Image (cartoon, rainbow, N blue to C red; front, top):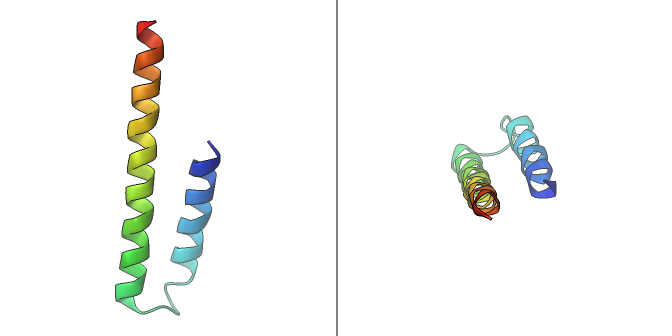
Length: 54
């Protein structure tokens, strides 16, 4: 859960700084955050499905 909170804070930081950062850097940071959230989602789904089988 902490990872999710940090990711949302980073996303807010990136979106708030869009006016100051060049577009390629903004897009790169956004892609990093999306990948991070995707990995978190996959891990959580695997953990919950494994817990449901037990």
